[in-house]
Each structure stands twice: as structure tokens, then as C-alpha cells.
Image (tube, rainbow, N blue to C red; front, side, top):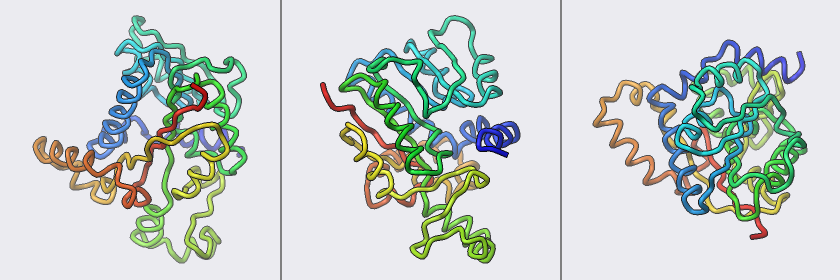
Length: 265
């Protein structure tokens, strides 16, 4: 199977919508939406592009809030689910497309660009650079880009050690000597460290404003979070949001959000 076929197979069987709707998934969602709104307020952003929009978990609510949203998604099934959430009153255009080729859009087209999924599934630096470069190109000078990544260390801690996959991973040469996971398309997810994100940022004309741990310690205690009562979950969110920008904790988060601003205002 090629990469697109592998992704299609994954998203036809994996309930990503359910993950984000779960209590532990809500932490990532609430945190990401908070920073989207913060960035939109700072610049008065109205026109948003989401690249890799999935089933519309972010695009649809943003459109219902009154933003003009263009959602680009590779997997047709995901687009069908997204379109099924619309009631016709939203300013949302849903298009099938690839994060590495946004040639249908002119330069400087959008006030804000969201890249909340594609970096999970791009396995070479060149492909990641191409996707990020395209996202920067179509964003207006001074506009924000919010880019999500999956981090390396949680996988080493949980998948390799906690789930007792160490021997299998070592036999398949899926770890470098410094414990960086080696991913291929069949593994579906590319895992990075903070220095990998920084190296990508250096290839484009942006300034980083923040690097945020969007779920922090949440996934290490998933069962506890999912079973928490409303009061406990509210307090967990208070704690999480108070520490999610602490750079000493970033690498341990399963997901991070790189908040960039395009140069050239």
C-alpha cells in the first residue's frame, strides 16, 4: 500500500472523532481551541485555512462561530463526515487536497492557517518542509500558523516500555542509538523532538511565539481523566493550562502546538 492508502485504511477504522470527544481528548481540543481564539483575537483574523481538517472537529465549530473557513482534507471519507455536520448556514468550503500542494490558493490568502494533522503523517524532513512552506506561503504576512506534532518520548515511555514492545522495536531497528523513534508509512505516525520542530521552523520565514504542550501529562493518566467527575476535570484543565507553556515539560507531551507568525508585516 502507498501512504495515502495506509492513511485511508487507518481513518476508516480508527475513531479519531471519538478520541477528541473523550475526556482525555477534550484536553487537547480545549487547549488547541484556546490558542486558536487567542491568535484570532490578536490579529482580527476572519479567514482561516485548516489543512488536514479530518472530520471537521475544529473547522466546523470555527465556521459556526462565524469564521470563514476553508477545510482541506486528503481522505474523502473524512470530508463526507465533515460535510454531514453542516446545516448550510456556515461559511465553510471543504476541499479534497494534499498538504504538500496548495497551488489552488494564491500567496497571502488566509489570515490564519491551521496544520493540525498532516505533520503526524509526513515521514521525511523534505516532505514536512514542503507542507510547512506551503502553509506559510498561503498565510498573510503577520498571520498566525498553528502546527501540531506528535512527540517522541511518550511513545518510548508508553509503547516501547510500558506496553512491553522493547524487544520487537529493537529487532525491527525502530530506534536510533539516542532513542529517537524511526517511523515509516506503515507505522502511520512520525514522532519528533523539540529540536526537530525548531529545525523545520528555521527553513521558513516565521517567528515562533509559543510551543505548547496541548495534552501534557493527560495521556499518561487517561483512565483517571476519563473517569473524573466534572469538578476534578475542571481543576485538571486549570492545572494543565497553567503549565502547558512550560518548556521543561514540552517533550513529555503526546501532542504539541507550534504557534508561529509569518514575517513581513
